[in-house]
Length: 393
Figure 1 (cartoon, rainbow, N blue to C red):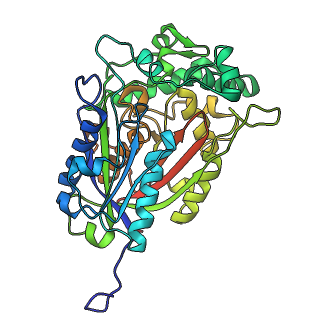
Figure 2 (figure 1 turned 180 degrees about the vertical axis):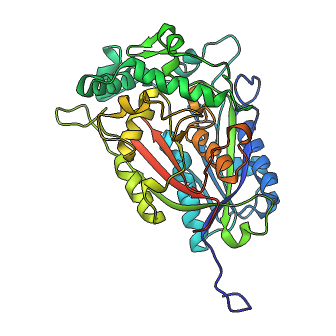
Figure 3 (figure 1 turned 120 degrees about the vertical axis):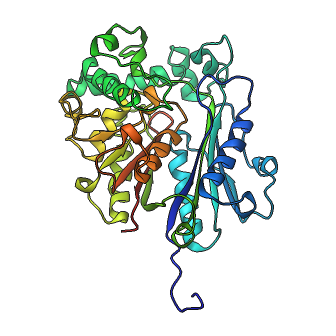
């Protein structure tokens, strides 16, 4: 209780966002990017680093940031410190853990950060990722021996199963790429802003069938951080607060077995309804949707699993014109990982914060009262969902 007898409002809110220079930025480590992102997020919020009493980190494929970032930032007497790893679902998970810590009083000002630096000069992005791969063991070793090494062929298998089961087409995947590039054209932070057509998508080179180049996410060097605190504290700070109303996770634990739903159903089917229920809203209330889009297929299956269309009807849904700046559903308004930048789950989260604040500029969605954010990790192994709003509700 406060001295005036009023109960403190410890409901969580995102109050700071830090985004470093992004893309082909060479000569810096992931730790450098992470430290800069946290400093930028704290400055954005209007809090001093000495006020940060919690730090959650998520390393990219290089794995070279962790709890040692505390020393790099000169943070002392932290009340929360941990490394979180559920791959692309980690950003949402970090915000969830930070929200619970703030709500319980375990900490007051928590920084959540992701950074990566896989790109090297004169080395292709795919090669940069391959260089960090570990020798697979067990079942993964068996599939690797058949050529299924890395994310591309495994997601291609998932996409192909969806295509064979529901009749989904490459052109329908292409509609997602075209729509998101149209959003990216309005985003000064995006790496790829040149508009593309469906013909461009179809003509782009194969990566792993059924994926063309334009079905696949970018590779980026950089870092993104957010600051989570209580609603009471947020009211005193520099930026409009983005309230965290609901959250959930799902970890399907798929195996390559006969009865697996791998490729057909993602963790969004479980995490989505749970997060919406916690927030006390329905899918029909959602204004902006920021989805994890490592591939165009991932967007399509997530839209189905959240319930924006029926299972198996995602292809027809996305080619109907519903996506893109002129569509009726604001999805991946910054261009996503396909066209903006690839910072794992921090890509959709950072754009969600921008949209909820009403700071999207030319790409600002017409309505932004409720924003749904997804994270997807592994090969459809992990999922996180957040429901954010500029209002406490």
